Structure formats: structure tokens, C-alpha cells
Length: 432
Image (cartoon, rainbow, N blue to C red; front, side, top):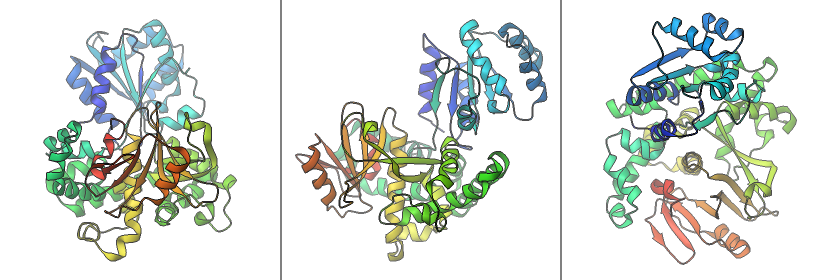
């Protein structure tokens, strides 16, 4: 299936100042497949090494990190010569051998001719634990579940994805029902590659749900296996509380919902762990709207979203009929699912910082505020076509943004200060 990240990898290959590349992302978002597919498409030879439970590799990297010696060891391991020009070296689950991570510095300094990409499902944690490799000697690429645009392409609707890129909104509006139907499917299926591949092939919602359950079970196993023992119970409680946190009208994270009397200091490490794993997106509040937005961040108030809208639906036991046919009981949670979807799409846009805004009285809340580096754009999210934008108006009176976005199921429309952007076109926000 097509991944936008492939183009970034091809650009990295051509780069004059190429460094070893680390691909970060949660388990099962498709890192291994992407690296192997990149090797298949762009190199004559791919040398794939998985460091998980690999004692021979642990021994090879245990002594000195001389790059000539390491290459010789890798050649002996794979049984053929490694040509720096035509070979791609893949280090998978590299966090299992921290010395292999440390070696990237020496490859960059002493053997930059080798093309090396690395990944690992718990790499974020390894990096934050101070694993000894210096920042500045490696490039990073973040991989997320498939975006809605990638989902369209994976389900045989490439021309609709291309139409979005052309921003021909007159034509897009003519075919809006196709987009709305696809978006409803995406809310259920989400963007985990295995779930999308299954849906593209069989259109079997029950099978998709089983895959999502398996993925969630694997995440829970990771908690026990890799997290410090003392935070495992808190991790589980926190992770399982996210759907109820998002179902509230005000989606600000409340520790008391995880456990009665819960406080920040009890759960800070657990939130950091989930965030480092790529399992949650932490969206902080800002209380003003200047560039850079980070300067106005309120570290005490934030929302937590999970990595994928399909997994969120699975965590809540949402049935496909409820989602696809519409159901009055579903109204409350529809807002949560829509906000999760928008957050997930915004995260995939490069160089976009995402926050949310509330004023000090709490009488005005804007769902997302994005910083493109050049301007601050407020984004109000509506699940259906209800287009009252009271908070957006209040925000505008106070901060006078050049442009404000309201995203909903309504058609594209540009007014003097407000752009109505359909939910299925939210990934065009930076270009608009």
C-alpha cells in the first residue's frame, strides 16, 4: 500500500548530508514493511537485521564500535559483501542492543557512505532513557497509522485523493457522498496497516475488529513486558480511561477520572511512557495566540488522544451499525471520534505544532490551534453540519487571526475571515 513516508525516504537517499535514519512510531504502524519495501524499490541489495533476541548481534556490538570491524561482522552474518552504494542496511528493533544505536554516530562520522535505516517499536523510550547516541548524528522520521488520504489510496480511490490535492472544491462537492462514506469507514477501520489491508481486501468489519482487538492486546502485553513494574497498573488504568476522557464535553484530561483522588504526580511517568511509545498524542492548552505557540503552553492542562481512530472505536466497543447507520445514542461520542480523527490527521502534517485554546474563565474553547511557523490557525471541529461557531468568534475578536477554520461535514465555503473546510479535506489545512 502507498505510504507518503516512502517519498521522504527516497529524498533521504538522495540527500547530500545524509545521516543514519531512525524511524519512530508505535508498534504495528508499518515500520518494518516500509523499510523493506524501500529497500526493494530503491536498492539492489537489502541487508535486514533484527536485533530482537539476537545474541550474535549483541556480541558483535559489545566490544569496540570500529565501523570496518562492524561491517565485516555484518557481512559474515549475512553471508555476502555489503556494497555501500547499492545496499540498504536495516537495523530493526534496534533498541534491544543499545550499543547498535550508539554505533550510528561512528557510521555517520567514519563511514557516511553506508545507507542505514533503523526502527524499533519502543525506540522512543530507549531514546528518552539517555541511550548513548548523540543528537545531531542521525535523522528522524515519524511514522503514524495511515492518514485518511492514504486510506483512500489503499482502498482503490486514488483519484479522490488526487482531487483533494488539487483543491478543486467544486468537483469535490459534487462527489461529497463518496468522501463522506469513505470517512465513515475510516472512523471504524482507522489507519493501522493490517486493519486497512484486511478492509481493502474483504470489506469485512468483523475481521477488522478482531485485528484491532489483537493490536490492543499486544499493546497491553507491552505494558507488562517493557514498562517499569511500579507504573504498569497506572499505565493500564490511564490507557483505559482515555475513551471516557474524550466522551466528556470538555475533553481536558482529568486525573480523577482515572482513579478517584488521582493526581498529576501519580500519572506523569505513565503519560510520558505512552507518549514515548507513540500510543498517545498529548495536546496541550495555550492561553494566548502568539508565534511560537509553545511559549504560551499551559503544561498543567492537556487532552490525550490515542494513536488511531479505529482503535479508539474498538476500545469503546463501538459497533459498525451504530457508526454507519447513525444512532441517537451515538451523538455524545460522535464529537470525540471526530476530534480524534482531526487530531490524528494534523499530527501527520510536517512542521505543524498542535495545541488547543481555552480562555481563563473557560467560557471559550477552540478545539485545536495550529502553528505553521508563519501563522496561527484556530480550528473548530463539528461532527455534523451544525455550524454555530461562537467560540471561534470570541477567539477572533480577541486575537484577530488572518484565517479561521471550521471543519465539519458541510461543504467547502470561504467567507471573509472563515473557511468551512470539510472533515475529509482537513489535511489540506496548511496549504489553504
